[in-house]
Length: 212
Ligand SMILES: *[C@@H]1O[C@H](CO)[C@@H](O)[C@H](O)[C@H]1NC(C)=O
Image (cartoon, rainbow, N blue to C red; front, side, top):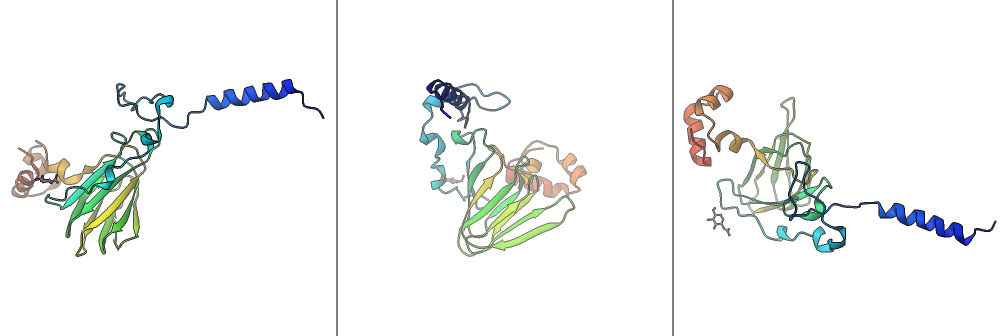
């Protein structure tokens, strides 16, 4: 059967017009106003490979704090290429004895990968209050299912370096202790709702910068 040149021409027109409608990504446009749904898309003609590469994780997080915990996020607010893709990554440094305190990530699932360190304890608590806990060494990774409270402790005698991969482009880090003690929520109400001693609550407020 002969295929006429006209048919080939029309077919290729249909193909090219349908491909032109495909939007593969929505690189965040930081110059446009941000709506409730997130960032607008940068003009695809202005998108370059640089939008999909982030070098901020080369530098370690500052571990000079009470938890010896350094945290460097690569989320949509600084990494435009991940906008709309539902993924992000973060770098976590822990000094010897350092701790990532109890926290959640707005419903995102996390995989924590140990890049350096001999003994990093990873743990999460499920909705039945059961604790899942395991010591990891370099090369190991642990998944923290979405929404669950989790923490990690560097039990080794060298600093630990970890990368966290998250199933959200802006997962946040909602830490239990700062939500409880790093604000002006009244000590009396914290006491009533947690049954913690008021003196302990005041001590933690002082330590973390809370009032009342
Ligand atoms: C690390 O944090 C401490 C405490 O906030 C601060 O004094 C120090 O300058 C920081 N170091 C760097 C390299 O930013």
